[in-house]
Image (cartoon, rainbow, N blue to C red; front, side, top):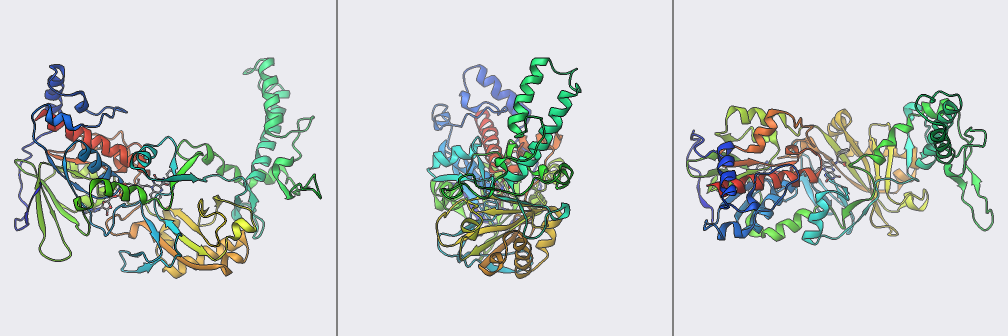
Length: 536
Ligand code: FAD
Ligand code: PHE
């Protein structure tokens, strides 16, 4: 067990007596070469994850080590989980009242108080939830592996929907006349195919293509762009219909259009298409059934509830001559000090700089490079009817706009039920800051007044309740994500840890703003910690 005392001692400047660094790595590599260290404890290298195993201790006669983990977000919980599986004794300290960090699901009755002291309590019906932070998972992400390993049920998250809308009011869209994705795509693909086909016929590509290549390209463009025999684009049924084919009107009523090439390009809607083939965002994507927080809940269950302490904000982390000392506050009673063999700290980087530590100035400066202080916000709008499905025939997916609300998410759950929850804005940067500066009621009013332009009056009249979040105002998080420069020497320094303290968090990965990055950072920290243990 970790040793725990009341924290009567003020900050002590211990030397960094216990170095991980390269010397331990060299020692460990030498042991490995001599067959004294199990392969599981190799230094982490890219993509090389060999979880530590209990036999690493038993077979080498080492005692069980204690680790304090700061932060019960995905990185902290995955660290605790992997260490505990290998026989470590783990204690997780979490500042907030619940696990998950930026993986936050809000349901009816849940309350959050922001850093301005504004409290919102969600008034959502049973079964309705809002993923305030993480909402989607690409199928290649390690997050999927944890869903399966932990037994979390999951379902498809619809990230792209041909019948969702595009609405660019700065570039021609009018209230009440949004464009369906399928229509915008048909027109953009049609006209770009026409141009490329024309360039090919004019010989503009003769330096690049053989005669056979040109024939193959023309075949593709004719099909991709639904071109006429003369190579022009005049629209096709892939634009969609105002009335779809049926027994009474088997050919359907085509939509009017297309607009001219200049108008289509002027709409700027093509700028939304790369998102769908983006390596992080392309379908299929998934979500845990019932809310993203299921992942962290399952982690807590696996780790053991008694090993995770909530409402326990850490205020100090120090390397000592024999391990680490971690100080944290409690709602009642004096501060506590825990001594353990090691620590993994996974709070947002900018917040850890406020702690009482004996880290080197280089570590402090490196943490300064990885602040997750960039803002993002969302609002969940609960509606008494699912008019986006009933009237607009949109079952999941995202409507993109050039308004300050940016994205509107339709729910990928609860199809066919009476009520549902739309994410009425999901914005970042300056837009997120300006929404964050409003009261919850003002945020709702602004989001709804814009959504009406796309969905009509029901977007206002069917609304029952809302809950909004401004991530830079969430205590103990204070931001949405970092844009880390992983080629910086500070990054390498943080990955090595300092003394017996290791760092984890999505910002300690090549893929910040995703749980995948948080999980890999945890695995990296666990492997580095274990390598040090095996080298000691
Ligand atoms: P966090 O989740 O921030 O956890 C850090 C924890 O440390 C928090 O619980 C915090 O309370 C705690 N802490 C802070 N200070 C202290 C202290 N002093 N003492 C003790 N504990 C402390 N990811 C996806 O996979 N898919 C998505 O679709 C997605 N969308 C997102 C959308 C938004 C708006 C946001 C904000 C994030 C999104 N993410 C998404 C990213 C995902 O939420 C993060 O990558 C993940 O939560 C990072 O995990 P973490 O453990 O590194 O940090
Ligand atoms: N992972 C977050 C999301 O999917 C943030 C993000 C958005 C990251 C877009 C990359 C691209 O919403």
